[in-house]
Amino acid sequence: MAIKISLPDDFVTFQRWELPNYRTQLQDIEHDRGVYLFRDNAGQALYVGKSKRLCNRLNSHFNGQGTSTEFAHLIDTITVYFITELYELDIYESYAINVFKPYYNRDKVFYKPVDMAVSWRLEQVEGDIDLMVDRLREYRRERRNLDSGVDADEDIIDDLASRKYGNLLWLHREITKLEKKVEKKRQERDKLRKMLDE
Image 1 (cartoon, rainbow, N blue to C red):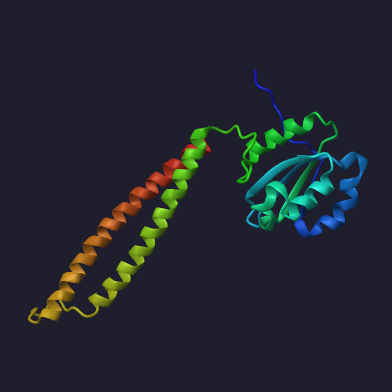
Image 2 (image 1 turned 135 degrees about the vertical axis):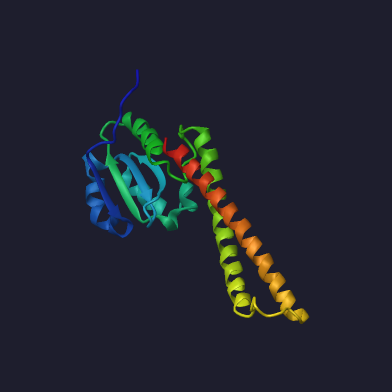
């Protein structure tokens, strides 16, 4: 039997600079405890936490105290889920961590270790693709420069022309090999993404 949980309907989302506008609400008796989620300016989840005194805890995070020294400067948007019962704080915090998978949470992470390994490999593959695509651009630029200076109908007489032609052939082979490698890496990337989505 599975337990079904969803985050509370009573929540508020605001940007970091708007905290003074929400201070009164967050200190209200009904809304002074809950679970909060920090996101960066790209919308990525940074951290999920819980507090019995929301306003104080948010301020300590913004000041880079405790667990937030690594990410305080990245906080852009805050969502606060208001929770009235103290015993529910842990439950909702654990649930939110495993739903949003924030980058800076270390505790209460229950998502599969295979997901972590796949995510790590995906980052590697995407980095490899970026490097290879950059190299391809360089090779293609070099090939265009050489190609404009080699005439295939001319007899290759001097040493300079033959070296240019040899370099052109080498570049053509390297580009072909690199294009195949990029395609394989892209296929691996797509498989890894699919694994994470399942």
